[in-house]
Image (cartoon, rainbow over the protein chains, first blue to last red):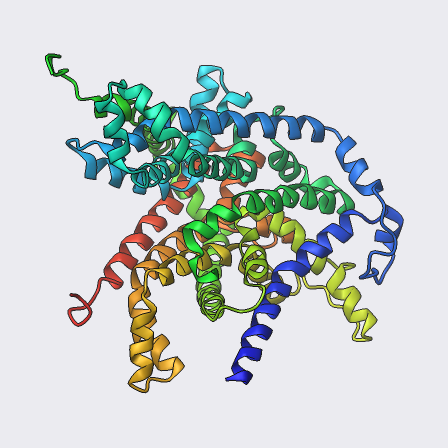
Length: 267
Length: 283
């Protein structure tokens, strides 16, 4: 029994190392000076930490703009996906309507649709409507990708809010909107926030569509991706760290929610 | 209640915006895409499809994509299942382990490619470590070493995308009462017997969802290979991008995209058929 406990601990540590060491190494590479990156063999310990590589990266053409575009696109996608998706999620959780099953099936199917099938035709549609190479184009694509998940997640969240409380508010004379805003929304808020984080992550990470739909107004990953072939290694490492860093924060932000949703084994 | 019942139910108003939005951004591009692939300036044509099929890169990309799925998925599911079972043993520092195991959920395949580039590149960390140990270095990503190049992509994808399977399996395991396992243990089942005959059958729906999702997502992988190998290891979606961007031919690009869509549909239907519960498990 004791041997088994130790084996379990060792297994966990091995997998954690597999997950964590690459993160450590990309941070090490991106925080080394260009001179020490040219040495071989590279040092595996942070003996020569410098912001030189990162600051060169951030000052390169298109990077600051790309960062700004990424944030704009991400936040707009979150807003638009919630604006369209929340009411649908609420309807799915609370109302019976004809075609409900068909609607849910459509959501599941669209979630499985490869991004690449949409991107190239959308480029043509956006070219003819004047939306090509704007952040709006990318926002529309990302909202489409996030919408099915937003509807499904928010409907699951609304199902978790007791129906009786909402009905009580209605009986005491609140309008449906007031009942929603004052009773349902506060309880659903943490879940909605987590769903917003998921949407932002999806938009932050999406490379292909953003690269195809824009030329000058690129998001950060699209900018890094399209200049990949012509950029020095140091630039690529810095780009890698810039793309990975938010992931650590996003997951830490929704970790509590992940644990609530999936983690009762951890208690 | 004296108010007249509205003619259109409220639910319709609530879901209508999402339906319109999805029609505009899924259905319309899909129709445009099919038209793009099979018709040119002079009406219907198979020229683009033939051009796609005549391109040697297309067949290489198809082969590599298929090979990636066949090699990656079994490894990924074995690792994810191990991780989920380890966590079910309530190890020490479970919260920390869990956090680091799910961090890759928020990492894109481009970022994963760049992370592993720092390790596998000629003057990278793997060769540096080997050099420190006196073992000499190796060109992992060189065109002349297709096997190690392919394995580098497999490792990067294993690192990035296993967390999705892991999370789905952990969620599935939560739904299985511990009583089942304890009952089996009372009747003398060993740990492996309990995993094989109690946990795995109960996990079937989670495994099915994870398999479908992961296959479709693996069909879409491309930036990780691009970041690690350039075009030395072409994948299907990467070829779409090549045709669209470098070769400026959106028609062939959509043709390849439709192949990806067709493969996704075939894979999804295949798994649903294959994993339909047999008569002995139902009930």
